[in-house]
Length: 85
Image: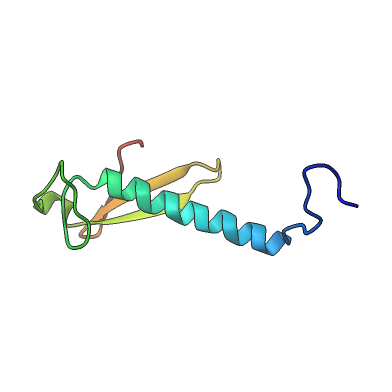
């Protein structure tokens, strides 16, 4: 009989890891969308309806050794750190 609050069917560790990774991807997409202060392609913002040449860039996301999210704006071969979100 399962303990109180348990269903008897525990989530396998690999499935938990996959769900955690999916959550991290979603968080990266949302934070990057908030950081991008323009509309471009399918990314449309009401508060920033126009394309801006300053945002012709890629945003790279990574998890640091301290388990914090780091977003780097990369423009034509040079990198600059993002605003904190």
